[in-house]
Length: 278
Image 1: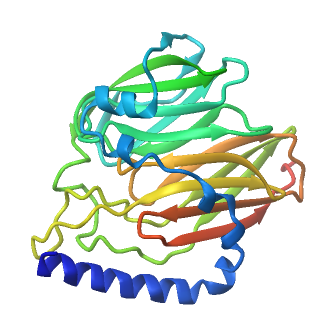
Image 2: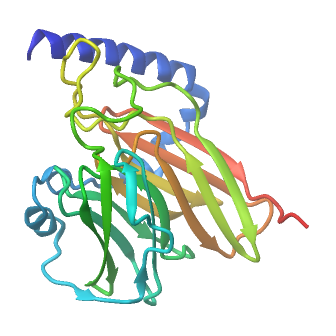
């Protein structure tokens, strides 16, 4: 191991220990949290071209569908490091949505599994290295359906320099922020996480390459029952944003969000579904 990398990891590990010590009461129940039991397809997320990423994810063919939509995706992104991406599948019994960006250094962005009463909808923010076609694959009964969206990028967000990113590659230690909005019996669960989501291609203030380091698994639960489970790669934006929708919710229901990153660090937050405002 290079001395510079060893020093970075030593500092990073010490910070992680301090972070876990400070959040020990909150993380005490994480040993049984489903987020820790999820698999993570490291080979697919590390693939350097679209064909290989699709193969490793198990997508051999897909049928184009107008029932997969990008409700508010931008046509042009000035900063490729933070590109809002909202996807919805109106195909009945959609099991998951998986996102790819054709020209990203690592094309596989993230995958979201919808469980129990969760709507097949997700909103997040992603990194795009250049103007590219973004692909959303919906899985239904073992088959894949596809929709695409071309997004023009002015400043790339996957390279050596990421606009607005600190030059430390270290977590801020801030807690997750959550908000749950109830419309009828559908709760929209929104969460903002604190994490650098390092790609492995940026350099710190001394010019040393910062190792890849990012959230890999996320679980959202309602009253202790998992409703959404996700696998993430480096193309998810720094300080990730996530929104999902769950049917059958009511005021006072308990929502929990838990994540696990590639360094083994974990975080969890709990909140309640608020009554709709009149």
